[in-house]
Length: 265
Image (cartoon, rainbow, N blue to C red; front, top):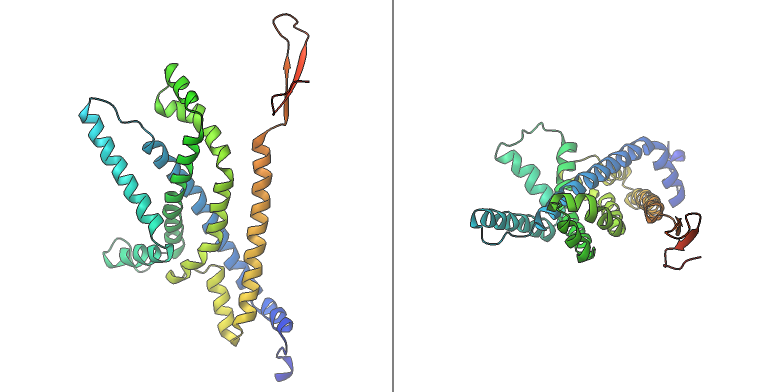
């Protein structure tokens, strides 16, 4: 039996991968599930919050102005609280606090709770990211949308948000990468994500360095792959580097190719 025990770092890494490979894989899949679901739901939450926060306060009518000011205040509180406290603390307060007050039972599955925690945490950051994207769009386009009779929601959906989302794609991708890494803090509520499963494997033989080396490599592969895929998506959203205008008032057969820098050919 003693002859089968690894004797150096790389043999221990190989041994742990062979013995606990399925455990690492399950933890990786749970990490991806939480990160993907939390980022998507957080984006939806942040989108709604950002749109609501950009609704201009009506002048003169207190019965619409006061409720909107209260709404803005509550949304600001939500953003400040979840951006100003660590997600590990939020996890403990939300999950175990909900058990204490009877909102959820002790047999409640951990995974839905973890996705909820990541979603509302991400939503607070996304709200500010999207609001920044909305503000970055030229004010003249907002005024033009209002001038042709579009409501705040219509101008957001058809004019502002398509441009804002394209501008903030790097920040959205960064939040996704952060969620992949920060899902490790959910081990405090016993979620079987990558860090939790790796810690369990490390404790079996007391080989913490080797086990966490494997975990670090998995996180690196995940974040590197996601970053490259998001960069490809950004290039797709940028569109072509040039476009062609067919015809003109004087010559219907004319054709002008214009590059993105505004130079014609």
